Image (cartoon, rainbow, N blue to C red; front, top):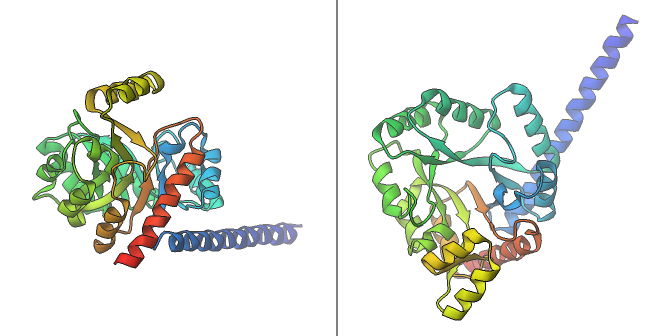
Length: 308
């Protein structure tokens, strides 16, 4: 009886390993196919784009959309370093065929205990970067200097547009200069357009300190009648943004973002982290809009290939 139990246990363990290896192989095939479709870029989603969906559903939609990478926001995967939590979410990601390579946006101050928890989580999940909103003081950045060196995981400072502490690219550059090379930026192209900056030039200025990208488009609305009409139709926060700035977010390719130009500069930098589409509009029904955004990226990749 004991031999039978051992034999059965060994069989089950062997079967689990075989299934796991098969799933991993399938995931790699899916990711390779997605990489080819996007010119070698690790095209993915900032999962905030799918914030109206629970985790399992959001992962399923991601695969249906034909991309295999995520920068997760905490609403989908909580920052928790308990082994059971890590294992559960790694398994969900593997089954879905989605590779989690970035996470955020997280706040940081000089609290080392909380900062270490974030880095421990990132290490356990195998992340390539943490998108961050660190306080602008020496104590916080001294701590980040130490932790990026210790863990080998970059911090990517996320810009968030007018009125934010990281509004212009110079706000980021001022804080990262003379700091560890792994302290850099997550370039949110839509917010830089809001800040009247050219995202292509921003990426060029940041150079090898670009550790993340939120691919997002925005456009200027100048016609007073159009502004009045949209103000009535848009959610309150977007209507307020339009009235303050004269700008709204839009589907990728329908605004002011030079998608080909961004990809060209990123390719020159050998950028290999997640190229995260972040589509914040139409939260309850974003999938068809996201499909159009992804088609824009594929077309830009083709144009880039013919012009590079």
